Image (cartoon, rainbow, N blue to C red; front, side, top):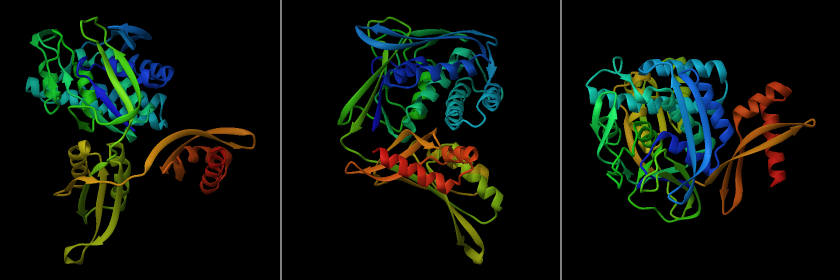
Amino acid sequence: MVLIIDPQVSGVAGNMFIGAFIDLGANQEKIVEVIKTYGEYFGKIDVKIEKKLKAGIMTTYAQIKAEDNNKARHYHDIIENLDMITQKHYPENEKIHKTIQLTKKIFKTIADAECKAHNMSIDKIHFHEVGNADAVCDVIGSAYAYYDLKLDDEKIYSLPVATGYGSVNTQHGILPVPAPAVANILSHTPVHTGEAECELATPTGSAILVNITDEYIESTPTIVDMKIGYGAGAKDLKILNALRLIHATSMTPKDTITVLETNVDTLTGEVLGSLFDTMLSEGARDISITPTIMKKNRPGHIIKIICKNKDAEHLCDVLIKHTGTLGVRIIPTLHRSAITRKNVESKITIEDKTYPVNFKIGYTDDKIIKCTPEYEDIKKISKITNLTIQQLTTLAIKQYEGEE
């Protein structure tokens, strides 16, 4: 499956992503719950999700109203608040933890763009519009919906972004469209002005787009079995002011990755062990550490990381920071032969009680060749039932395959 983001006419905004994700089937009630849980720490929040006609097309409109309790926030204040809220409300929720990692990356993108625009360090820069409670809600809601639809396992394309033209009134005065921060965020993204004399691409929407897109394209690839979601913007314009997301099966399947490698011989076992959680939380798809013999017959380790192409530079920085290595080999855009995979929500029954379990299913020629229950789900059930991980894994696979 692939997702195609189509901002060619509408541009992008955070609430448009939320609406479009919900239109594709993301859990509306859970998204609203998560938005309110985090947003209410930043101000009074009211969230309304409704169907709305835009240029004759039925869309989903996510309206987020906020009475902010602080009009200007520093980047680190936002990050600290996110961590505090997560620890208080969702200490062991894996989906929420992934959501917050993506949220932090999105706000880091915005912070870097603002720093460049104002020539200030990240410790001194403060957010105005993009640090408001409604912007925080836009980012949190979009990130949660992204993981709720399991889009992190799929290839995501984006068509060129319409930015709008003219001018926009900001806390810093009247600025040209696209505003400097947006121009910085989209500096490596195909853009055009579009047909509307207003701001079509907001900082939050732009930052969400660049952090989830794997590849930019000029036209839609060959696809079938399309499901389309529309997320409405607030304004009624002469254009269709709704972000279109197309979820489909690609007729030209391909999977490219980047491999990062480095050799180390000075790290303790504790540091090496901690790398797994660190790199995976920062976006790595897989990590392996292999013992080796280095020059002068010293024992060492080869650290190998598999990642999406767009995450390579960021993960290089993280790897260098946490290992002190003097260099990282980047092996770009390797073709990976991969079977068709999907995540499936299911249940297992133990002594008349049912427990939710997520499975990773691998197919070839429409036949299941691999069925693996999620370890974290099995671990939780093990603590409740006192059955071993191995017993539960075998039972879960047997029950799932019996249902097929």
